[in-house]
Image (cartoon, rainbow, N blue to C red; front, side):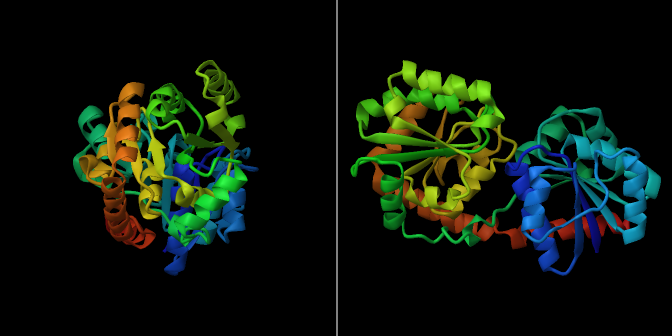
Length: 364
């Protein structure tokens, strides 16, 4: 098959990582895939760096519908696969102009007109049961047009993914100048209110009361949301925890950080899927997550990790303290979670299911 992946993005976060994993997996199986986005996007540069072909027509060009339609016809594109709102709006126009089947990937919770129109135009893929339920039950989308295919991760293929935990820990202690008896907590991802970094900082003093040697590594591009980043730094000062909270900025070595961490924290307020959760599971790092969105489904109600109440710093601290106080139980959950991730969240499984949706779209 010849597939055009359409995504408009200013950053490289969870949705973008999923699209790249999908695209590389399709290419590995012999399909021809192009990615179209806005000129100069960091995501497109990342695609090129990893061997993915970027379309010669861009989503921000003058006459973009004409140029992308010509590209679709010229390459003999079989399917248009849209990701996120801007791509869905444009994909609908391209579908109407070319007649090429449209697939819409539901990666966020947003009852916007383009998604309603896309539900009538073609099949839809939801990235979790939670996302599918939102569009079916709250938005009234037809259930027979939405197929749930959970995201996958290829983070285990990173050179640092198999780094021995003791070696990774020693590296982190030296890299961030931490005391040898430090307990290392990790949170990474997009900096912003929905990800709950402020809730975690509010919980931190309660954690330190029982574990005074705890240190938090906070990874994420601070420049993406400078006002909120400044708020977090100010909060750390006001709570007298600034010496124990380390703002790392954007990092390319997340697997090494995961292998070094005692716990991965995901205190999100609303999470359609939560790629960070399965990345932690895949690398065997114990996960403490908010009981929000798809997180409790992924952690099987607490069987594969620890859950806490949403936007509740005290309960977040309780979950962290319990996890640290019961290391054998916490490790057993993480080991089971890793086995589940290796079975359910490898790219091969996602690719196989996406291809089945493509084949259904082409047959309709």
